Length: 264
Image (cartoon, rainbow, N blue to C red):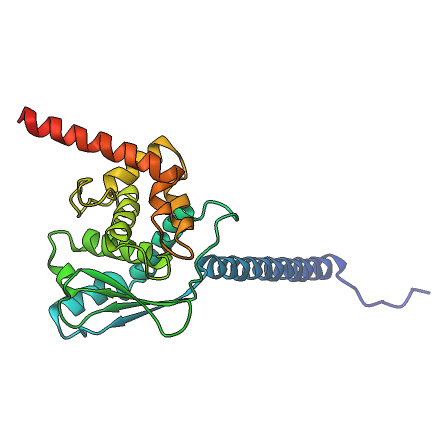
């Protein structure tokens, strides 16, 4: 008696299909896990980036996009995020110069507003403290957009603005010439061209050239001067140990200028 016919089961085809499905499912799981890891890493990096900024930044274009200067400012610096990058890079540079370690009390800076003015200002950049502690407004003159190299001019102005933001000023008692010299030093040290002329010792000993010379003689000179202005400006800040070095450097620079003038 013949055996009854049994249904034929194509094990080869079934195994291939099942294996393909399992492989596809496994690949999908791997891709999902990788996507999750990448997403978490991206969020972490973004959080760290935001935290590294240290302060909130807002930008106001009071000139408006209908004006030539306002339109150029918006296209060159606002719409592409370039203004944000310049400000945060400038801030990092200035902070590293003025606060090299934890022993230097940091000035509280919580919010910075970059205000592109609607009319030309007396100076290309000005900084005003806000009504709340840690708030500052950096005013930029629209005349910057008429400079031969507007991008460099505006970047330099932003850098000088951030230097003023981070500098202690002896609670408003530090001489304007001294603050100007510190700002100029920080701008030139960052690679921007100088804008102030060197002032002789008969008027003031503070100038970008003097600070640069003193910093080269003693690393940390500028940071020490800034720390000394945390509470109140006094002549001791200029006549103490650091001041003595500054006076000697000032006398040397003055002698060089006099010799150069005589030679001419």
